[in-house]
Length: 362
Ligand code: UD1
Image (cartoon, rainbow, N blue to C red):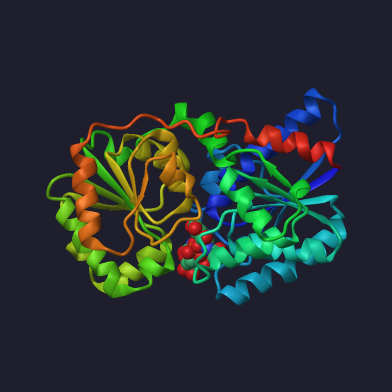
């Protein structure tokens, strides 16, 4: 059986790594003949956004790098499609596995299904119901054209059934991102420049709705500066955010207690999440990781495609509402630290369940 994985952007890597390992183990231990090919679309290309993750997650070098780089939504998606098609024609995989909701995900799923190759979508069924997010369009389209839909939680199954997807295509397996967290948590290490940070707030923002809207970004920054009077604020900058900050002239506003850092490797960022008093973010994956770790998370979005982090985890939506963010921060900073949350099937074994199903349905 030949399985071809397609990854492209930072959050894909921690989802793909455990499945590569699980399938590799199936091959060795159970003697199931599986050939794996890894394609990197090159959507993320900076060493700090890609290479370092491959190293820390112990992923093999990609067999193919499509080197698409950054562009508009349509250009980036189209470029992945154009460059992936000949690779699939040439390598003839039995199954293409795609991850999450980035442009590379939907592009690869479309190419594979039109070539008649079976598609498996890992992290299927999540919905924010917000079509202004490119990721939401990517999720809906990818799920429709996928043959196997691997979901992290019951809400995702419900969403898929509501969209007319047959029950036998849906497999609730749990959260592969948590597989990586569980395996690598013992190796988490604080960034060298922050060995003894004391009490700190971790902030990350990268969604276009937050960082491409410069007046709003300035308001957020002013709020963080205010917070930094009571607790140190650590803010690793996504390249998109760094670009916007450069345009706002706001970077000089940073204070001794508001630290901007470059994008961090996985193990360093994991240690920051684990040790933070609270995390302020607009990332999807961080809502899940903080929930698992029991660290309060304030999400600067109006909605989430991961409602289980609100009902069973540590996540609170604060929307685009600075007074609400301030209030929620005061509340969580006054509380004792939370306990790690137990969400069903977020147990470190999701990839093994996927491997089992992939090898049975081949
Ligand atoms: C993409 C995903 C988003 C995911 C995020 C994680 C889509 C639609 N969005 O957003 O869902 O949460 O990745 O990071 O697929 N850039 C660099 N170096 C890089 C990559 C990007 O400098 O290695 C800069 C470029 O200026 C680029 C910008 O970041 O224009 C945005 O990159 P892009 O891949 O288009 O989207 P992200 O914002 O990273």
